[in-house]
Length: 86
Image 1 (cartoon, rainbow, N blue to C red):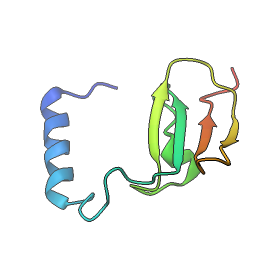
Image 2 (tube, rainbow, N blue to C red):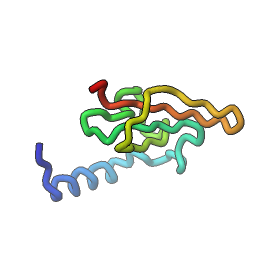
Image 3 (cartoon, rainbow, N blue to C red):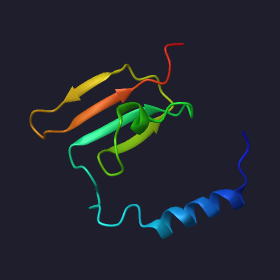
Image 4 (cartoon, helix red, strand yellow):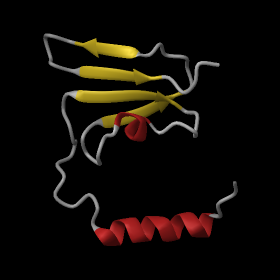
């Protein structure tokens, strides 16, 4: 699948014009962090059914085990979402 830079710019313009993130605090959720694989076939927000702003999300090329970490001192919740079981 190939997407041109022009198409990406147009998509970004439509997203910004729609105000999809208007009213969301920044940073968004202070306690929920989602770490996912850089595998483009797996969107951690989609896998977990998260709406925009429900969690801070990042991707990493390393192999994280799936699971949940909860820090009782800070209340921080980290969810690791593996891309595949390959």
